[in-house]
Image (cartoon, rainbow, N blue to C red; front, side, top):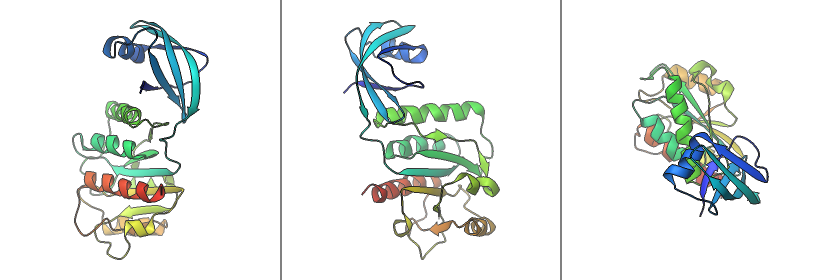
Length: 233
């Protein structure tokens, strides 16, 4: 299988890559004229034969195009609290590979981390891109701006499911439906009662992920894995 790269513009018959991608092709992967790579944009992958390779510029010729088989046909949004250290980054990598379409970071009353530096958000975007390449997806999940709890639900697609440790009646697997869905995972300190009430006022449904109490990063990956398994049946 050829190495994959996401690109920002449509792929024409003749392609030119520069910057970080040219450096990776020439100096990291050590590809040369005649080798093949795959360029991906908007769910379409293009097979490209390299014609010249230099660390500053790579040129090639597109020989075929097709839809990406691995891209999910459902649209899953994950609302994710900003976690301490590299935990959010680890979640983004995992859920991107599982098939999430959009990630909406948020803060709530019990959030431990309450701000997101521009450099960290840019790193999250790189992590998502690399994870999408690894999973051979056709799109990179969007990493949106940070929302507070009061405005979070305006940014989410219905139906909205909120994972809540105190929910005992509704299980996630019984509430999942498609083709569009939003999952909300609570912060490390949990959700306050008034926040759960506000979510329900916005027609969100609280769901249980099981009998055990999970850390936020574990809950996020587990919930996405369960939901995607159901939605892609």
